[in-house]
Image (cartoon, rainbow, N blue to C red; front, side, top):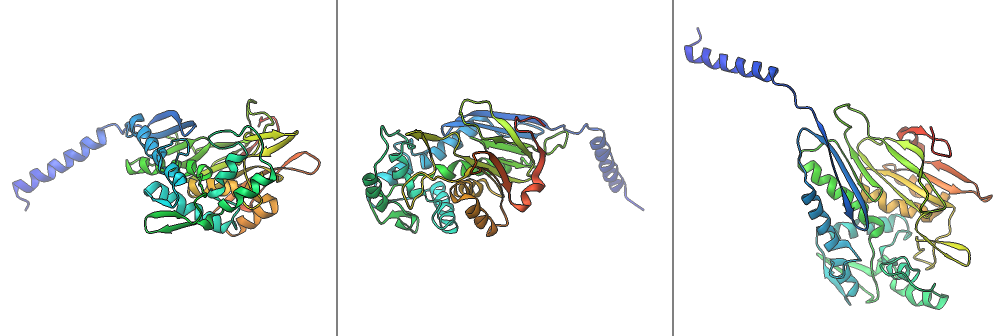
Amino acid sequence: MKSRRQLVGLLAVVMCFATSALRPAKIPRTYRITGQAQGTTYAITYFTDRERVSQTQVDSIFKSLDASLSIYEPGSLISRFNASAEGVEMDGHLARVVEKSMQIYRETAGIFDITVYPLVRAWGFGAKAADAMPDSAAIRQLLPCVGSDKLKINGGRLLKTNSCTRIDVNGIAQGYSVDVVASFLEARGIGNYVVEIGGEIRTKGRKLPGNEPMKIGIETPSAHAFDVPAIREIISIGDGAVTTSGNYRKFRESGGVRLSHIIDPQTGYPVQREIISATVVAPEAVIADGFDNALLAAGIDGAFEILSRHPEMEAYLIYRKPDGTVADTASAGFERYVVLTTADDGRP
């Protein structure tokens, strides 16, 4: 027979369960943080029962990232490396970005190369636009400074074997920043979110309280930067990242020829390929961001050769055919992400 104390304890447990059953469930709300950072805009949307991340916290993250990776900040760590004769001690951000960059450099046979910065500046795509296009002599003078094989990591130090070597991680830093912000959200118990920085996106979970999948639009390339973008494809990737690189917005013109902002590190000249937009889906935004530039520079055949070695990635490529018309193609697994294909003018 149960004692009086046991009966009282059992009654308390029963009352606790009854009270919990009567208490209304917390309905997830939508929280949105927007702003400007890294020379572009950002938008963070998360779904939870209460505010868990503030604008101040997000701005602090971007400040930390800029202090490490921004070539536009004279006192940043990357700027100090570029100004140095031998190298610098890395912080966590620079170490992780350089590690991923070197990995992609090796896996793309040098197509993706963060040491291309001197050439990027010469062609007018750096922090300060060049007044005139470089001639062949200027390109030949800069080529010995380029090549990630001139970078060495010794413990926590990033070293250069040629004092003129400079690095620019803009081709991968926004993807890395997306991952940093996403990790921050998850560390605070947020399991349903969208993080977007300058068009680079990472999603997890679903839109609440409706439990709807996250949807992302892929733009149709336009000839003019001021055109209102039309949507070519609508995709839903689940838990992962999607980034796009295109040469239809960032370019210069010389003698009627459009020059891409993607520079071939081996020739020193802007890439002239048929691909005008490369969208990559990958588990991490830093990987997608690095490879979308490489696919753009590799051309159709080269892009599919790279993708064949990376089953964890899928890609959607928009390219210009020899007759000038625009077409698209994709890796075999990309189709599973497509929710809707639109007409040429962006309509369903």
